[in-house]
Image 1 (cartoon, protein in one colour):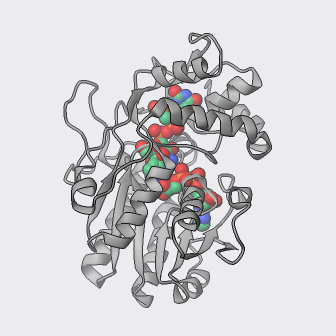
Image 2: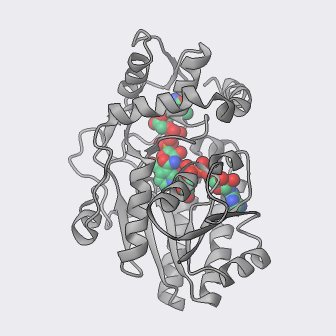
Length: 332
Ligand code: NAD
Ligand code: DAU
């Protein structure tokens, strides 16, 4: 039985990964999570106690991290400050967690010679024009736009340096936008779904032409397990499921699925420095490691996600009012 340490396992993608690991492997998972505003212990409810243990703490706490690495066979590092809008308002926590936190984990991986997988984002590559036939690949130059994406880019470069300089057994994956259950209501899709449930009109930044490349969080999880098992040390793998959609189309889909007029949304103040388009070419992961996404129908995955938010109001309601109050101060 492999002992996995999962940082950020009470967050959106980390908790989806823990559920996926319990369902598809015999691994034991220890979650290390600080439970910031974005972490929710309830996202791990229902998982068997003999398979999952939980430690509340900071990835930048070197003493705590050292003890946990001593008992782990592999580490999957999801913990981060993850929201672009917050990084425009207060960048400091992004530096503390995404840079210093990742550095702290890498030093522990070096001391304990533990297999380390670093979770990153396609945003490190900057953005593409709407009509550009190119998509991001593993050799696209880094060109991050926001405080969030620049700290993720910095963390990726730290991982590469620790592999080359100290022989740390690490891999990196850069994934596109995830959707699915357990995503915080600050993010685009859950914000609009919970707005409609509450009778608030969805809010589209600017003209809504920005394109994101959507992947279901469960497909992200299966890709990460594949890389953990078969990835080549020192290498980077891009994860994506050919899910490009512009924001306006996504809002209209949500409204349609939820039985509302498809034009019942507001255009609000655009995000500063708003990246125009992300698009992933995941050929390498598919051809070299044989991974395939399972959720090929975005509309069906979105409908299931809407059902989840309808059935789990107790999970998201405590964060909703404060999130909307914050957006209101920005005209969003
Ligand atoms: P999230 O904000 O939902 O969750 C982050 C989790 O990390 C929370 O549980 C939080 O409590 C925890 N955390 C934050 N700071 C911590 C610290 N100092 N110590 C310990 N725990 C801490 O984020 P998410 O959307 O699940 O993203 C997870 C990872 O995936 C991030 O590294 C992000 O960059 C990456 N990523 C996200 C997406 C996406 O679409 N959401 C896509 C690609 C990559
Ligand atoms: O590409 C991967 C990235 O995807 C991850 O690295 C980030 O952690 C994750 O948050 C996500 O970043 P985005 O900035 O793309 O996601 P967000 O959900 O904040 O916004 C998606 C798009 O929707 C973006 O173009 C901004 C727009 N938007 C967002 C909100 C919250 C709106 O139009 N209205 C909104 O209310």
